[in-house]
Each structure stands twice: as structure tokens, then as C-alpha cells.
Length: 261
Ligand code: ADP
Image 1 (cartoon, protein in one colour):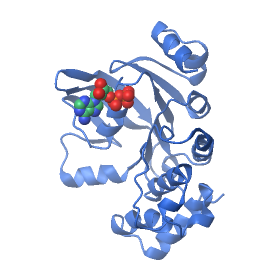
Image 2 (cartoon, protein in one colour):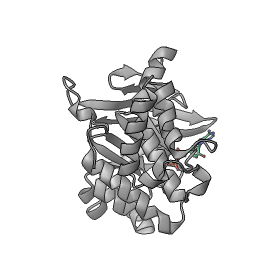
Image 3 (cartoon, rainbow, N blue to C red):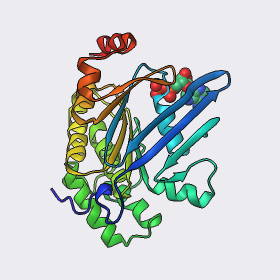
Image 4 (cartoon, rainbow, N blue to C red):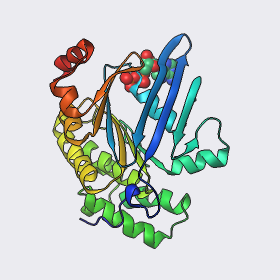
């Protein structure tokens, strides 16, 4: 597999592998609903961190804050040393370039080929030449097992294939961090494994930082360096996958896992 064109943030020369993301006392409310409650956590460059917990516990809200799609009511969020709020428009654009996100719904551009879906942002946002972007897109399509689909339209692909294109599209921007928001939840069950295999491969073969919200506990156990268990907008337990899945300390974590496993 070609790895030279893939994101390798921890291997950037002169860049110390340290903390990439930090949330400090982050509070987010929707009306009277306090969704995140003085939340603290950090993610080191190159690590794979999985957020688990019941529906409505605030996991997706964290990803949306990191993407600057939402603003916190209190607290600070820092990505690669740059504070997100307040930040100038230019700073926000720079931060967004460092973050790739894949959503539950694939959101591909329906009127563009697969290749064009992947090359569009590198050309228009990063100013890459069409040739270079096309070459990288072909490597990424190899990585996600869709080399033969480059000229197809999204509607000609299965949901699992569309999601793999969405992953390639996110990686094409060479982000330092990949945010994955329940990326298999909208898929038919038989298509889930193919997408998770691609993500396992990316986790293994690149040193991109990953922050995943998932209900796929087997996947979380395989790829995570750290698992954070959420409940009501707080991290109630954090640790290695071995600890969280085999010896959880909190009764709430045990209850949650017995319901989903
Ligand atoms: P999770 O990802 O853990 O399922 P979310 O972060 O999606 O949780 O949601 C946490 C809570 O915030 C839920 O109660 C949800 O209804 C609420 N919420 C999320 N987004 C909005 C919004 N845009 N407006 C109002 N409430 C919202």
C-alpha cells in the first residue's frame, strides 16, 4: 500500500509529537440542556481515542465543537497550540485544514465523479495542481479498495463504498486529525465490516490522530489507544481498551457495555 502520500503527522520533521487537542472546562448548553459540563480531556498526536457512551451524552457535540460548527459557552479548546474560540476567520480556516471529519451520512457531491469528489478540496482549498491531487486521490482510492470506481458517480455506489470515498476525501486534505462520527451507523449491516476494515488499516498504517465516536465496540477495542466513557456530558471513566472493556470500574460503564455488547 502506498503510504508516502498519506498523512503522517507524527512524522512531520521538526514537529514534536505531543498534545494535539485539548479541551479545558468546556461547557456547552442548548437552551437549558447542559450537554457538556466542564469537560476536560486531551489527545496526543498520533493517538486513536474513542468516545463511547449512551446516546445523547454529548459525544457528537465534541466533534462539532472541534470542527468549529458550534461554539462552547465556557472553557477553551486548543488544536495544535491554536485556541479555537476566540479565533480570527483566518485562524479558523487554518485550524479546519488540520481536521478531517467523516459523518454518519456521507455527504458526497452527487454531481461529481468519485475522483473529483476527492480532488476538489485539495485543488480549491490547498491550491494543489489537478495532476498532483489526482495522483494522491488514486493512492487513496487504492487504500480504501475502490481503485476501479474513480469514474463512478456516488449514486452508483453502495453506502459502504460511498463512506469509503468520504474517508478518502477527508484524508486527501492531509489532516492532522480525523474525526469519525458514527461512520457506520447509517449502513446496512453487511456493509459495516468493509468500512471498519479500511479504518483499521488507516489506524495501523498511518500515524494520523483519530477521534472516533462509535457504537462498534470490537472496532473501538482494536484501534484505540484510549477509550473515554461519557455520561451526561462528562467523562466518567477513561483508560486503555483492555481496562474499559474487561475491567470497567464504574457501574455506569458496566451497564452501558452489557447493553451494547
Ligand atoms: P451523542 O453524540 O452522545 O449521542 P449529542 O452530542 O448528539 O450526543 O447530543 C447531546 C445532547 O445535545 C442531546 O440531548 C441532543 O438532543 C442535544 N443537541 C445536540 N445538538 C443540538 C442542537 N443543535 N440543538 C439542540 N439540542 C441539541
